[in-house]
Structures are given as structure tokens and as C-alpha cells.
Amino acid sequence: MAALSGKARFIFPTFMALIMSFIMSAIITAMNIGFVAHYFTSWMLAWAVAFPCATFAALVAQAPARRATQIICDWLDGRTAAP
Image 1 (spheres, rainbow, N blue to C red):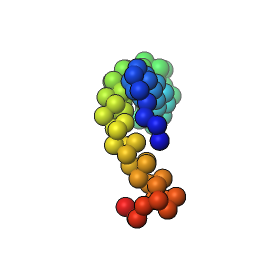
Image 2 (cartoon, rainbow, N blue to C red):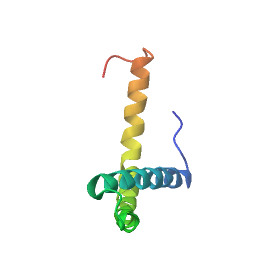
Image 3 (tube, rainbow, N blue to C red):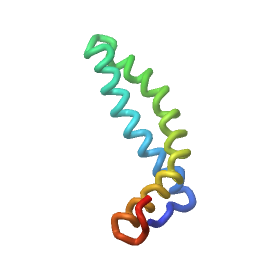
Image 4 (cartoon, rainbow, N blue to C red):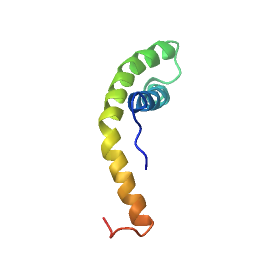
């Protein structure tokens, strides 16, 4: 598995965090308050908190997730013993 290099190491997880936090905050806001008159405002406030948190989490989790993925793929392909 090739590692992202240069700016891509930061751009890719940031876009992933943007998309995922946008969708998740919409769903969670709807579950918590329903589709009320102030839904959009509440959703955007939730997303404003979720996006920076998700970006930080994605940047921190990037390397361990890549290693875990490689270990599992190697194991599934029979290249190593069970983890």
C-alpha cells in the first residue's frame, strides 16, 4: 500500500473528514432535534465543531489505520501469520 506523500498526506484526510463530518452531523442533528425550523442552523453549528475534530482525528489515525490495513491485507493474502 503506497503512502500518500507531500501535500496529499494532509489534503486527502481533510476531504474525508469534511465529507464524513458533514453527513454524520446532519444525521445526528436530525436524530436529536428532528427536522424543526432551526434544523439547518443547528446542523451547521454542529458541523462547525465536528469538522475540525474529525480533521484532527483523521490526521492522527492515518498512519495506524494504514499499518492495520496492511497487516490485515497481508494476513488475508496468506503472506503472514494471523495477527
